[in-house]
Picture 1 (cartoon, rainbow, N blue to C red):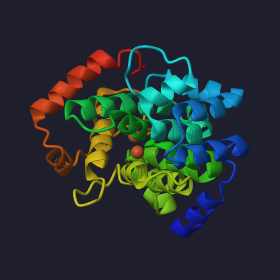
Picture 2 (cartoon, rainbow, N blue to C red):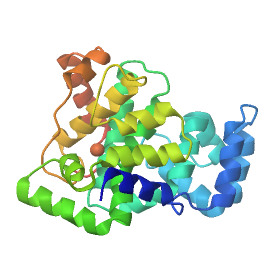
Picture 3 (cartoon, rainbow, N blue to C red):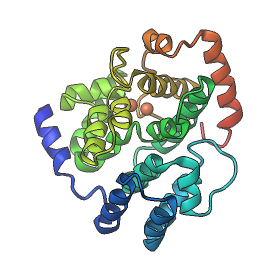
Length: 272
Ligand SMILES: [Fe+2]
Ligand SMILES: [Fe+2]
């Protein structure tokens, strides 16, 4: 299988964004700048299964607020349109994630929180959007596991026998990684490039890319979460931290220590 085959397969995965009727209506509403939070809230709440899933995600605390959110309009106000839209589109994949690779959900949740911690530490705009990137950064793994099960077990075998990194084994088997696959899928859902690009390049940081700052946040958060042992990324080695990513955010080693201390405080509920 070459990367073209994998890409065609991902393009064909029509079943991922489920509930197409209500989701299409909701994303149309969200794309209109005149839409109010109330209108979107009503449309989401009209679909009870969807609204229950979105509220469950919102209250998984991926963004790190402490008070519970009980209504969709409240979530819209607190998290913003882009975050709620992304959650609406991702409900099915995130549902699959909690049942897929052991530890991936905990890894993703801890990564989301750490993205929020870093974003707030450097006063970034829209820390909630950065958190949702952290939540979704490895969603390509879920897609690959669900749709290419045989190749996926080959990856697990390579990792067990050779102690490689997950994405190195993927490159050997597929010619692409879960980062590419996740990016294609979100691109297909027409999410903006400031959400798609950081996911595509979270293992391949380069300071010259358009959304380098957000990419740096998710790249660093992913590695800190691995180093601290929250959940599992599916392999036993920790990827190398790009020094350029720290430079892009003007982070010193002392800042990194502050972030890690905040992680100890704020991610107590996620299984290590
Ligand atoms: Fe990854
Ligand atoms: Fe990861």
